[in-house]
Image (cartoon, rainbow over all chains, first blue to last red; front, side):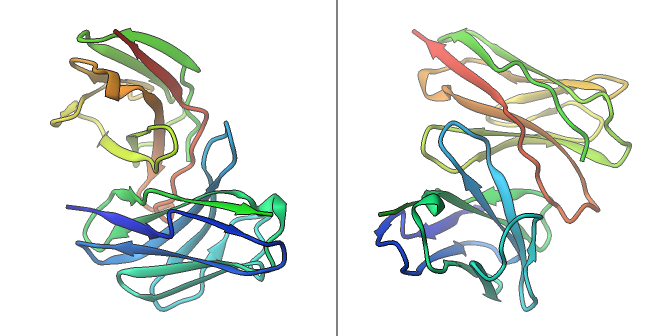
Length: 115
Length: 111
């Protein structure tokens, strides 16, 4: 139980294009999902908290217009990196919090490379 | 969330117990202690969590001191696949359920 998937697992795109990453909770409903970013040899940094049916809450320093988050259902949240630039290249990881659980379960991550 | 302090790295012998310490001296009464691990190029994996009492599951045991200012994660029989970065995190249930990751402990299990 408590499986979270992400798609795609890796993506390469050209500078200036937009990339959408999906995060799905496969066997439970997630009222809240989180998006993290991890640069090489660094720890995970929380980007935003996504609640189903409402606007995401962004951490300080994270541009909401650049990192668009949509949480339209209890099993799906999407992160769109708009107008991606090479400095956006990173490992993006989502997590999901169940309606009756206290624990966050993480997806496998999406590696983004912007050329 | 309270800050945690973990050793940056440690080596363990395969088949032996691995004891991973974590200090959280400023933990509040309503904050849980969570342990996750991250194997290279994967998302973090939940291991165990606790509030006051010691906890055990199929992966590990969590020992929390009586004053709750420190804890130890015990991997009873370390295998090579346990090589990972282990994160100790304290989280208040009311704090939007956010997890704040520190540097963790890089554990290398050696044959």
